[in-house]
Amino acid sequence: GAVVSQHPSWVICKSGTSVKIECRSLDFQATTMFWYRQFPKQSLMLMATSNEGSKATYEQGVEKDKFLINHASLTLSTLTVTSAHPEDSSFYICSATRPRGYSGGAFLREQFFGPGTRLTVL
Amino acid sequence: GENVEQHPSTLSVQEGDSAVIKCTYSDSASNYFPWYKQELGKGPQLIIDIRSNVGEKKDQRIAVTLNKTAKHFSLHITETQPEDSAVYFCAARGTGGGNKLTFGTGTQLKVEL
Image (cartoon, rainbow over all chains, first blue to last red; front, side, top):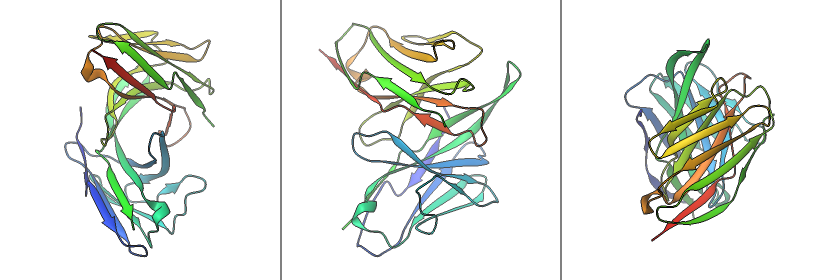
């Protein structure tokens, strides 16, 4: 499958600081990337859709001023958690969509996930 | 929007037995149904997917079936091995813009020796 990387894999920061997480598609270009948040033993919650060259689309209830997303190139999207607080501690996962061509008249896209970033805010 | 339900939440099987995880979805227009395996502390890994124009797909020990009429799809793992132990998520993608996936709540599969 396709390779998506995230950096850092884990980060510990003090309350009030900002943290940047990078998501890269290593072997394909991704016009669309997604950012998810996952709490322990829970499912993935979509935070926002990141589109290359345009503003991100945030899901309802996600503060766009707190979770800044930048998708400056076809292989890189960044998520910045601003003024982090302990309640922001979570596992943040990105994904990137890769075209797989046409099948049955539909254009197919697969979604590949990064390894995740564990954020702990003290 | 789309709503995906997944059962069971936990599943324990003996090595060599089969495991079945079931999901239902609400949006009849959904056309893509991937399954992901997530190991502890790692990101989800795509293991198999199925599109709405297909009823069944198999890849070695893993198979997925789709019943569009009933709006449910299932993951079947045969000859389970200890390394199959993980959390499995189903997902569905509607025809709305953005290629967004809606995930099920996950199934913790434990394969016991």
